[in-house]
Each structure stands twice: as C-alpha cells, then as structure tokens.
Amino acid sequence: MSDIDNIFDRAASGKSLVKKRETLTIDYVPEKLPFRDQEAAALAQTLSTVFKGARPSNLLLFGKPGTGKTAVVKTVVDRLVKKSGALGITVDVPIINAKLANSAYKMLFEIAEHLGLNKEEKKVVHFTGLSMGEATDRILQFIQNKKMRVILVIDEIDSLVDRNGDDVLYSFTRANERMGKGGFVSLIGISNSLTFKDKLDPRVRSSLSEEETVFNPYTVEQLRQILSERAKLAFSEGAITDAAINLCAAMAGREHGDARKAIDLLRVAAELAEREHALRVEEKHVRAAQEKIEKDTNLEVIKNATTHTKFVMLAITKSKNGNTGEVYEVYSSLCRQAEQEPLTQRRVTQIISELDQLGLVSTDIVSQGRYGRSQKIKVAVPLATVKDALKDDPTFSDLMSSSD
Ligand code: ADP
Ligand code: MG
Image: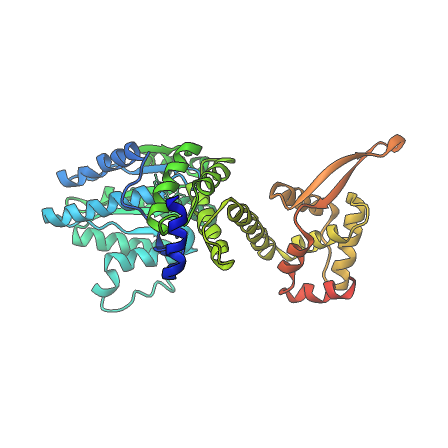
C-alpha cells in the first residue's frame, strides 16, 4: 500500500518520476559494478606493475557490447590515477574512444592533447601535413624525452582497425624498444568484436595481447539486479514497478546479456511515461520503448545507407510481386528517374542480402506450383519508417512524391 501513498505524495509535491537523470545515460559509471569483480581485479593486477616502476603488459579486453568493459576500465583507471597521485608517482592514462575520434588522425591528436604535447610546444600541434607515421613519432618522441609512464587505453579499438588498419598500433607496440630507461607506453585495447584479433598483423597481435580478458554477457538475473540498483539511483520512490524492471532485463537478455540495451530501455520507458504524465513506469512503457528504439535504429541505418541501397529499399516497397527480377526493374527505373547509372543485378542482389542480414527486408521462398519456387522480397519495417528515413534526402523527396 505504500506504493499508493507514494503516488499521492509525488503528485502532491509535483515531483517527477526521474530524480537523477544522468544515472540513466550510457556514459554514467556507477560506484559499484556487480558481477565484474574478477575482471576489474585482473585489470588492476596488470596495471599495478606501474607501482613497481615497471611497464604493465599490454592487454586486450574483449566482449560483446554492453558487457561492462568501458565501465570497468574507467573505474579501475580512476582508482589508479588517484592512487598514483597519493603515492607521488606520475602516470598518464589517456582513454581514447577510437569510434568517436572517427579517424586515426583525430585519435593521435587527442592523445597529444591529453599528454600535454600541445601546451608544451607552445602551440597547438598542427598534425596537418604530417603523415600518420610522423604524427605518431612526435608523440613517442615526447614520451621518450620526458620519460613519461603512459598507459594508453583505446576503447572500441576494433573500429580503428576496420577503418585505418593497424599501422598506428604497430608503432605504439614497438615504441618501448626505443624508449630506454624511464619512459614507456602500455596499450590497453577494448574491443566489441570477438574476431578483432584476426584482422591484426601477427606481430601486432602477439604484442597487443600479452594478456587478455574476456567479458561474458550478463544473465537475465544479473541484468535484473544491475537494473534494480540503477533504478534506485534514478527514480523517485515507487516511480517504477518491479515488473517493468524485470521486463527490461528479459528483453535485453534475449539476444545477448547487454546492460547497455537494458539501460536504454529503462531511460526511454521513463521518457515515454513522463510524456504521458503516467504516475509510474510500467510494463507497457517498456514495450513502447522497445518499439521506439527499434524504429529509431532502423531509421538511422536507412538514413546513413548509400544512395543505391536506398534505391533498392524504395524499389522493394514499390515492387508488386517482390521477385528479384521485378525489384531490379523497379530499381533501375528509379535510378533512371533520378538520372543515376544503375548497378548490376548481381550487386543489387548483394545489397538485398545485406539488408536481409540487418533485418530491414525479409526474403521468403514461395512455391509457384509447377513453375517451381521463387523468392519474395518484402520490407520488414513499417513503410512509414522508410519514408521518414528518405524524406530529407533530396534525391528521394521527388521520387516519393511523384508516385504515391
Ligand atoms: P561495453 O563497454 O562493454 O559496451 P559499458 O561498460 O558501456 O559496456 O556498459 C553499458 C552500460 O551498462 C553502462 O551504462 C554501464 O554503466 C552499465 N553497466 C555495465 N556493467 C555494469 C555492472 N556490472 N553494474 C552496473 N552497471 C553496469
Ligand atoms: Mg564500451
């Protein structure tokens, strides 16, 4: 019955459902990280070498998204920096997100910023005009001259390698050979992709993974406990039901135990409940949140697709019987209307199978009686989502208004 009192009290005091909104953002790192004690201890153990005056081993952390890698590293690094301050030992620990930095060049710039290269040289280092190798060299030279102890954390390191290859990593892993006494660079790489290592040159691979830690997905029960803790921080008393929390955990645990997805659900469910002035967050808000997140994700994927992928998507929505040949005809005619050269049918078939893998289209095999069987291609997201995604692209606004 205290729930009812809470509802009345909240309404009377005009309090909102969410009392500490920042705890629902993805960057928020809570004080405690249950179920990650071992991983955190292993990382601390590796890094503790720095307090013995030696170089910690390079380390690779792997795990699917939302398994707590970034949160664990931030927590351990935070403690390490505090401890080194207390002990009077200077350690520099730049944490760079390779995906956000968006290019190897930008990443090097951020490292230089963090290490104070720019201040030191009394001007912002204009890497512009330097090759990647020269820019890396400047950073390493600086570390060597100053005998700095650097633990370089590269989060989402897989996206760096996908985009720029592993040259930069090669230079960093080789750096210690020339450092001499005093300075060093240790590399902590964090990867969402489990097959990331396969993409590395064998020399970089063996050097980077002197040690490895794998983060396993959370179980639904673990997600439930993580969410309950988070909900206590985030929500006013009684502003969310246990059933809603359980549903977030169950939904996030369905594919793999992804705490990020679970917290996203919690946040969006809260926003939807607030928007309708609900008295508390319930299961229906979680279900609506799931739909919204899915829709937003699909929307982004289509928006950011290549022009020809968009043509293919639109062609599928306009095709009558959805067989490959007809989709290709519609696609070609859309291209011609937009005065663009169509791709080959083979390439379009490839695009269709990519879209299939992303869950944006579905292909069914249908029986044609004595004519055998054929493929029927359909768009797997609401038509409105496709239109929404294409409406701001000038190539498509005309095409869409012209017909329907
Ligand atoms: P990853 O880097 O593996 O993709 P994150 O560390 O970003 O995952 O975690 C995703 C979200 O889940 C973050 O908001 C983080 O605070 C939270 N989280 C992950 N693991 C835990 C845990 N064990 N306890 C509490 N919160 C967690
Ligand atoms: Mg992460």
